[in-house]
Length: 227
Image 1: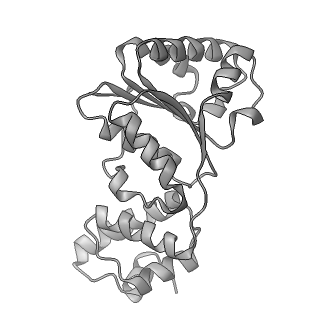
Image 2 (image 1 turned 180 degrees about the horizontal axis):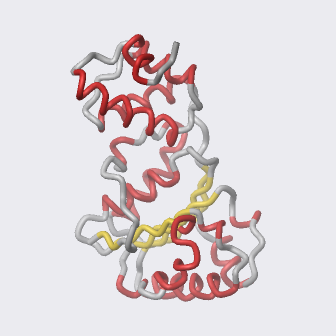
Image 3 (image 1 turned 90 degrees about the vertical axis):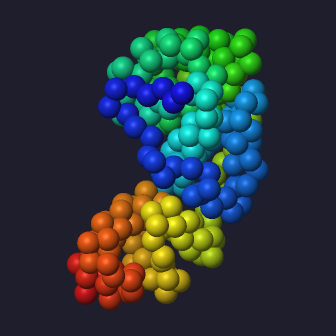
């Protein structure tokens, strides 16, 4: 059962199948193992748009009947500490943007309690940030050392071919047939982070459904008001 705080949702296209691993295959396989029932603690870090949120949500989606929760701390803000109190009900906890609250004593105390609870019950904990744990200003030495000993994976950038494949997979998940030349155009013209490109695909998806048009470059230009 995916447990979500009020107002937070998992994107329905956030699955492992729609994520191109590229040089990050080891990290993705380890995330899969926790989603399927393995125990452990993983710290996932990388630049914004590298796919951190997608992977955390994919892990929750892959958990199936197991009890999993996705907590996007940047969205939850001050309420995040309260949600950590219910970790005893979970088999897998995925915490996004953990760096946004590191340095707050109340949050770190709640995080330490959640960590110990999951560890004692053989659960899984996956957290994501924009840097490794050693780069953050922790208040509590105990929780800093615990995460310092976690499995730490950096999401490395894709090469040009990998970016096209990642974009193609995102398009396929929307039921879109994205010609290679159109994918090349999007990657040349717009920022290459997957968050931006995902929003563009949503816009293209809606327009193509309405117009029932093939995703040629002229058609995509007309949708995105590009000359």
